[in-house]
Length: 103
Image (cartoon, rainbow, N blue to C red; front, side, top):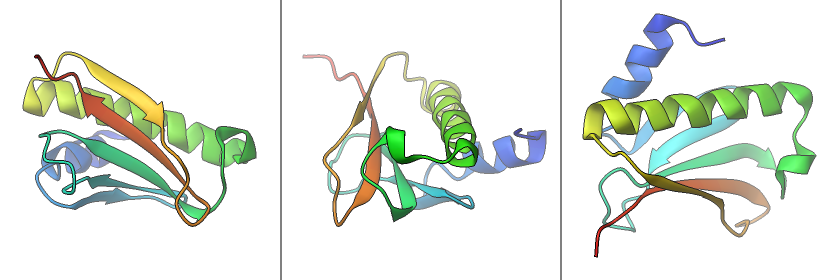
């Protein structure tokens, strides 16, 4: 699903706000939460839950979660993260990938 060029582009863009946009989702750094590596995967269409994904969205989403996690580990050396679905904002599905902060 993800070729080497797409994976490299996603990982190299981890220092900008809008990191990657696909047909169904976008990955952004959440600058409102000052935690390096705090990523948000948001749907581009109004949905409220993973159960609302089409089969194509589900396949793309899991690929984005995997590649985002790999990028956090490779680029930012983040070993542990919390993955969670946050409340929907304006019916947009938002999934967070937040590094485990010691302390």
